[in-house]
Length: 214
Image 1: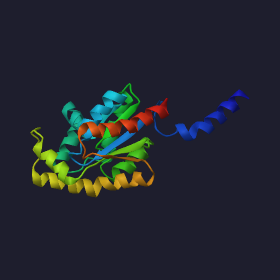
Image 2: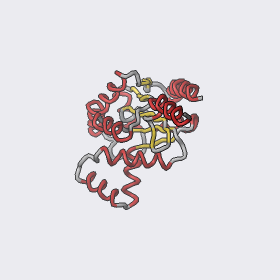
Image 3: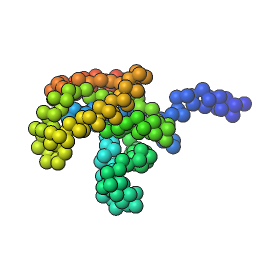
């Protein structure tokens, strides 16, 4: 009898636990999206410090893999050199590995999914649906001003490249935001405000998530 009870208990809870698992690990994932210069990096650092999330940047993971000199890294480097887009599955595997290797179970995934194909592949491969999408909404004028003013020595911070990046974001990433918005999963932040005011809004969202988890 005990076995039957256990089996039914598993069935009843499987709706909650079959998704958002990596192996035996239950994870909470928040996608962080926003245009170039919307302040995602700054606010991710604040969320990590105040709410104990681990920040995963798809771009950083790809760069680290290239630096490692692995066969996979060489393949990624060659694709980038040839101007090709790195397949979703490659980035997703790096994200999965980072989540599995981390002792944490709460992750901010920054700059991914970049497009609808990324999004669909991530959910298909990982069976993970984000808790929500944190969307930093900022005018192009403000983002342009920030990017031109910042002194990070980035080659891509010139006016023509910046405007191309805005165009790519609008065409590729905004449909991802719209998809999740249709499911009630987008938390929109007015990212045009000063940094400390933006973080007050961010804190309100993550405090609610923290209360829900406890």
